[in-house]
Amino acid sequence: MAENEVELRRIAWSQTFPFVRLFRTLGLALDFKRLTLALAGVVLAYLGGRILDSIWIRSGAGVTVLESPGHIQTEVEAYSKLPAAQFNEWRQAAATLRDEARVRVLVLAGKAADPPDAQRRLASSRVRSLVMDAKYKESLRDARKLVTERLKAGLEVIAKDKDLSRSDRASRRAALIGAADSLRLLLDDGCRVWVSPPPDSVAAMSLLLAADPSVEAGQLSKDRRDLQTVTNVQHGLAQCERLEPRGPFRGLLGFETHCFAAAIEGVCAGRWGFAEGAADANPALVSSIASAGRGVVWLVTHRLCFSALFGLWLLVVFGYFGGAVCRSAAVQSARDEGIPLSEALRFAREKFSGFLLAPLMPLSFFIVIGVLIFLGGLVGAIPWIGELFAGVFYPLTLLGGFALAVILLAVVLGFHLMWPTIAVEGSDGFDALSRACSYVGSRIWHCGFYSAVLLLYGGVSFVLVRLVGTLTLKLAHTATKAGMNLASSGATDGVGKLDAIWQMPAWSDLSLLPATGDIPFWGTFHNAPLDGTETIALFFFRLWVYLVVGVVGAFVVNFFFCGSTQMYYLLRREVDATDWEEVYYEEPEPELPSVPEPAAVPVEPESSAPPPPADQPPEPPPG
Image 1 (cartoon, helix red, strand yellow):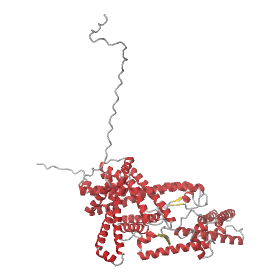
Image 2 (tube, helix red, strand yellow; image 1 turned 180 degrees about the vertical axis):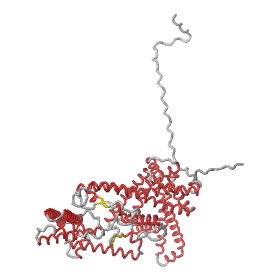
Image 3 (cartoon, helix red, strand yellow; image 1 turned 180 degrees about the horizontal axis):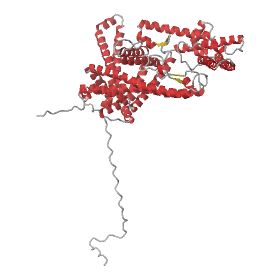
Image 4 (cartoon, one colour; image 1 turned 90 degrees about the vertical axis):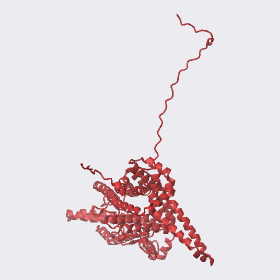
């Protein structure tokens, strides 16, 4: 009997290895409609954080900053890697250096007689408002005018010198223009592209002032002294600005971005464990995530009111837009069809209470238990009987601490499953919380494995998306620079117009992986003094460039929500044995066909003649 041969044509990988469904996350996250939703959420979250920053800075609760050679360290970064005692010493040292810089620039500008006088003045006013009075502004204008006049005179001297060759004349012109532009950079209040150290103003000043030999020695000495004083004050003001406290959102965002870049570097370099933290030269994935967690702990422990308000704002924003992203991804994963933005937003609006309350319920439980433990501590403060009562009933306190630990771990490990639960099942916040805790508790190792796959896959995907964004900006800048830099900016003579407004890193400085340094991949803005129209153009350049950067950030948000939705499908199938295709979906009600109205029947007018009698035979027809 002949054997039946079976030819294997296709392997159902999703049935053999269900976790491969996680690799659909990249395609879901790159969908234009979902990117639009995520971008709207990112923009609103950023604006809310900056508004809260302005309030906290005015109240004097900003983030402490310390300038070290080539690097600015914030309070968040110091908290993440220093013990508590050293952290307090760091804050005190940073505050002392900031006060010394303020006093030094105030005395240098002649606005205070001595350091004690400067401290008295700074107690009620900011250093910039004290320095920037009418007299100093006039000195600043005179310094800028002096630079322009000496540059013009020096260029005329070079042009009239017949002994110079063409190359020597060009090199001397370039050197003179460069010196003038570097001084203009120092004398401008808008551009602060350098961090440390500042440009060599002494050499530039000597070259520029010596360019005109017709100036007398006395006048030259006075010009040098006045210009040196103004540039030193500008140096001091720039340093004070760099040491000014930042808003909590800005400080946390910078640190978390650094940790994210370090985690991506750890993923791509194969360092996935606890090798080094985010602040080290060779960061690893898990240790970078741990550093990011310490940043969140800093926000909660040192800026509690800010963390409550900003956390609530994030829940509102991403409860709406994130819920819409999860709904869109859930329907496409189950039914292999997309839904319009309006339908996704309508679903998020109808289920908004669930998206908002699901993360708030465990927080409310946490607060209630914490308050009960606090009240027990108050009872323990009662003399004599209090400590006895607290000691006897302390097992209840330990039980409460255990409940807090369970709630905290459940939220950390399962909060990302709450929104997909509502998006897939169409349920409420309580069901989302119960399912998330149940799935995590019963399949903890599966959750860990799926999270690791998503982290590794997401890191590589982000590198590709960031590369596309970097090339987009760099190629656009290079092509625009070729034409726009043919003219210099209105306030300089040697800086191209586009480079003054927006400058990208050189090709050799661009990196494939996210950089953990101070220069972002989208470059820097306001790199030289600008005139009026260039300042307006600066606004639009920033708007469009930051839009591209926002799309890259929106991809990260999209990947989080889409990956969480895919993980929910996997856990639901393993725990509840539910098919992939089952998703809550409201079929649109069919429209009934309109029934045409019956045609009107003409009614003949009634005759005025009386009706014939009943017994009278009908008249015969006419013959």
